[in-house]
Amino acid sequence: MGRHSCCYKQKLRKGLWSPEEDEKLLNYITKFGHGCWSSVPKQAGLQRCGKSCRLRWINYLRPDLKRGTFSQDEENLIVELHAVLGNRWSQIAAQLPGRTDNEIKNLWNSCLKKKLKQKGIDPVTHKPLSEVNNGGDDRDSVKSAKSSDKTSHHTCSKPSPALSDQRIPSPPPQAYTHQMKQEDDAAMGACISGNSTMMANSIHAVTRDYYDDDSFNPLQAMANYAPPDADIRIPSCSATVATSTSPWLALIGKSFGMNSELNLNPNNSTPMPSIITQSASSFLTSPVGFRPSMNTIQTESLAMNRFWDLGNSSSSSSNSNRSFIDNGAFSWGLTDCNLLDKEASSSVALMEAQNQIGGMKWAMDYSQSSSTLMEAVNLHNQTPQSLYNETNPDGSHFITTGTCSSLLWPQQNQLC
DNA sequence: AAGTGCTGCAACCGCTCTCTG
DNA sequence: ACAGAGAGCGGTTGCAGCACT
Image (cartoon, rainbow, N blue to C red; front, side, top):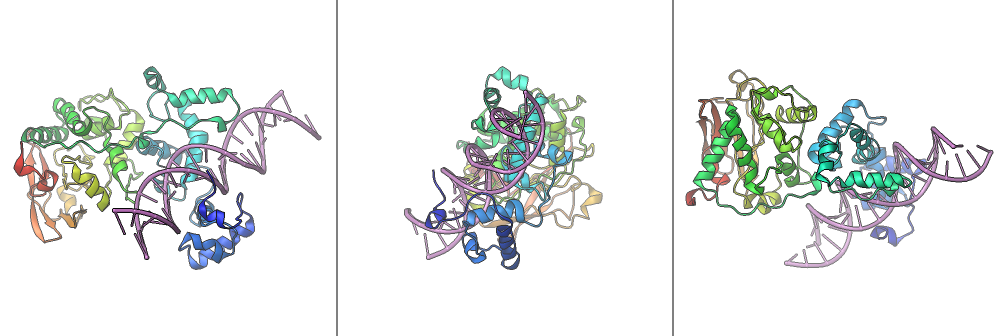
């Protein structure tokens, strides 16, 4: 416990900021920028620590802040994002222009949690409260009940860890066998072709990689493995994707862990819960991806030998074509929903699915053809790499990489 | 009018990560 | 490789203002 080290050195003001202090800070940063925060208070003539100045600027003085109450759309988006990202307030805030993480965090703790509970949804797991209570582990609810018997919200104890706090451990080293690849290929193919029986297997195939259970959440994993400055984009645009035509959506819905009873039969038109549909559809119908940091790749991703695809399904009824580019870190999901559409392909001059692996950059040029063999270029040594147009059991196609696979499966030549 | 409890917001605290020397 | 400083994040607390008795 104690004050930040910089505050020990001299007697610094704490507490609320006066209008004069605000003006000094605003004037200084407007003229000179903040640069090194620790030097800001001195330069600006403030008896504050740099940390306090930074916070005041970010949460209150920044000119691009949108003040005022949150709209219903914003609240909905926060709930959706929280379901995916957990208490990653800064990442949630990144999706809401003009809003700060602190603001969103306060809104969540003071308002949205209650609203969800009133709707019978557990704010931690985003599952129905009845389900959570049955599990007997609704710690947050228990605590809330206890604290409500007392005095104020301040008596709330530390909430149970959200999904985001449950860091996904590095997967155990695992040899990648021919059989496993075949299973994965079949599973992915099934995922694409909409074969319901095989799709069930595909879920298993995807999740089995790391945890031997269905709790694995690829979106959560993506967020967890992403570096703090990662460019994770979950655009708010929300095209309608019918679950009946989008097995991949069903897969992601399952992976969200929000509805374990999700019917995976693509011919079944049972609507998904709206929160899943919206989250998943917005996720899937827009370019999504992030650039893993080198550290991430070196320390975590390269230790894996299997990865998942984060592409998006076609929003049309066609689920036959799909591109996933396995590159050893994550399969980049930069495939636009129309990318493989022939008419649209010409407009996509260069859809870059670029990543860095050990200093190599990969770029996929989709401008040549949308349905035949494509070329990937290793930018590092300019070596063309082949992409293969593969055929699903039902005759539909999907695209996968050739030589790139040696990165995905580094032990390809030493298969068990 | 005074006391009490509740609420929402702003700010602080401690921790972790990253950068730099 | 290591230590220290800075930046950023999420959890927590302090407090002003409001509602209610």
